[in-house]
Structures are given as structure tokens and as C-alpha cells.
Image (cartoon, rainbow, N blue to C red):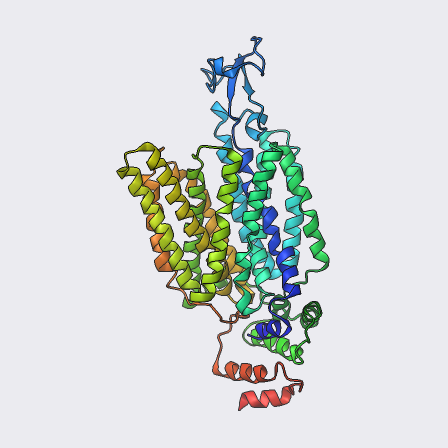
Length: 527
């Protein structure tokens, strides 16, 4: 479309786009902290016991000789003992004694946080399309930093759980807006590069390293708040979305963004930029009132866009269910907590690289299909091994390996669908469509812990469910239109023959030194 022609004209991937990737998509590094903080903060110390309040036993006693190790009081109303913990880590569990009769608080904190992520995804999708991408991103980022700082000084678990909800709200908001925002500055053939950058995996790995160096839940929240500061400087350099400005009639501001892109990339601005922007705005206005405010109903208007929305939302829900569910299941791995957190994070790096190359080679649909087949094989492999391998050591190693293969498959498919979903919607409802898919994903993330808890240590049923859902996703990924190499749509107006002629005329002149005469262009279009 017109905006793609402008972006390609000033450089689809150069210094300006690198800046955007760092300041906008790079925020996923710290957002990963916000999302995954409870993976450490919700862990119980390795050793704890309930000590009689009248006992002279101290914290430094040899706990291996203490008979009450990890034993709860006989009665929930027993006040004759106090909890004592080993000192290797400080989490919210030992901060507020969230054990025994209070053990349900830990999953409640995570569930409420995920509910915040869900609501944030809904609100951000609407906000980004109404007030703009830039305002939505930086307001959410500022509040995310503030809430993390407040969380560090929580005086009760009730206060902490409320703050975690608002942190989740901001996490959902940032995740919805940062990826489409980045995509709208990148040339057509370079869009998949954004998924190959391991910002999320890097943030998760950095969290594991920080937990190892400073295993204190309060300090980690303060460190996370401080890490926002470099990204705040991006507000001075990162412009509003060119596409969003043009579609909303802010043509002078849109042209200034093109000037900035050309200046950063040392390229000449296309001579007919103003006409291209005007045609884009007029195309949208030709069918809709200029003050039209889009909402979530618009992603279901018409069979074509409705089918795309339903398929992508089902796929995102299933991917989230599997991704977070397997993370909970692999948590039974023995070994060092921090090393396990790091290794689980690094698994996402090859998935990003694989998705990048396959997206450009075979397209979005077949890339998604291939990785869903891989995830299906890993899931059913876990189910088979859990029943057919007698040796406990071999069975345990095989289950972990196959589960990680399944997780690699779904992580790679998710990397593919980050691009696929963004490219499937026109600019005016892109954030709404992406936000709805994110919302569906949060529903899957909330449900997954309960499904994986079915049967206790028996993994047969959960992984049969996962395998079946991954196979269904493989089929669904082939039911939506391919977007590889296709310019991003800017409006919901369907392309007609007249529009095609207009695009051809504009395309012939976009890099020409001779300006297009609007009157001649209109005459050419009528012809």
C-alpha cells in the first residue's frame, strides 16, 4: 500500500529502523521481568519448618535433625509455632508466611496478575488505535516502572497482590502495542527480522542472572524499575506511527516522520510523499466518516476478517496454554533453580532464528504448520514415554527432552504468529486485532496451570490434550490467507480495480524526480 511504498523509498531497514527496534521492541526485555517475576518471587525457600514459640532453637540450628521440617501445624488455628526459613533466598513466601493454610495465596497472585494482563491487552488495543501508538506505549511503560517500585515496598500480601494486578495491566498494554508499532516502520521484506531478536529471551535470562546475584524479591522489583530509565530516553527520538498519523488525517505530522526517517537513513524523501499520504487518507475517508472510532466489533465485520480473527485468537489461546503449561510442568526438573530458569529462557533463542528464516522462505502459514507439527510430536511423545518406558531415570530424561521439544515448537510457532497476526489486519484495526489475540492468549495462560495439575504427577492426560490442540492449530494455520511479501493494508476498504490503477500510477512515479500532477492523476484514474 501507499505507506509501504514510502517506507521502502526511505529505507525499509537502516539506522532509523534499528533505533525503533531498540527503543520500542526492546522494551520486551524489561516486560519479560514484569511477567515472570513470580517465577522467582513465588518460590518457597529450600527448607522451612514450624518452630515452637517457646523453643530455644534458632535459625542456625541443623535443620536436618529437626523433626518438624516442612510440616504444617496440626491445626490452622495453632498459634504456638512460628515459621523459620533457610536463608538462601528471600521471596514473598517467607515474607508473609504463605504456606500451609495460606498456600493458596501464591497461585492467586499469579492468576490476578494474568487477569491484569488480559484486561491490559483489551484496553491497550483500543487505546493505541484512538490516541496513538506512542502515547499508549510510553504511558504504560511509565506506569509499569512506577508500580514495580511501589511493589518493592509492599507491607502486606494484600497490597502486593493489588500492585501485581496493575503490573499485569501494564504488561498486557505494552505487549499489545510494541510489536505492531515496530512493524509499521519496517519495510515489507524486513518484517520477520523483528521476531529473530531475542529481547524476551534476553530479559528472561537476565532475570535469572539477577535472581542468582540478588535473590531478594523486593530488590528485584527496584532493579526492574531502574532498568526502565534508558527506554524513557526513546520518547525524544521515537515518532508516532506514520501509518496511524496518515489514516487519522494528520498529514503534516506524517510527512515530518518521513523527513526524520529519510534523514536518519541518509536517503532522499520520495518526491510524491504528500500525494501518497493524501491518497491514503482519502481512501479511508471515502467509505467512513473521518471521525469514525473503531472498536473490537470491527475485527468481526465481514466474513473474511471475522474468519481471520477467530482463527488467530484460537491459535493464540492454544499457544499460550501450551507455552505456560509446559513451563509449569518442566518446573519439576531437579538441579539449580537459577540455572533451570536460564536454560528455559535460552530455548526461545533458536525458535526466533528458525522462525525468521522459515517465514521468508516458505511463508507464514507453512512455517506455523511445521512448528505445530513439531510441538504435536513432542507432546504425544511425552504421553507415550510416560506409559511405555519402565526405567525411571530414562523416562524422566526422555520426558524432559520431549517436553522441551514441544515447547521449542510452540515458541517458534508463536514467533511466526507475532508477524502473521500483525500483517493480517489493516492499520486502522491492527492494534485491535492484535490486542484481541493477546487477550485470548491470556485466557489460555490462566487456564493452563489447572489443566496441568490434573492427575498430579501423571502427565498422560495433559500432554494428550496439548498434542491434540497443537494438531488442531496446525490445521488452523492453513486456513488463513498468506501475508508473506504482501504490503500491509492501511484501511478496511477493499481494493477495487480503480484503486489498483491508482496504485500503479503512483508506483510508477514514486521514485521519479518529476512530481505527479494531481489533476492528471485523477484523470488517469478515471480513464
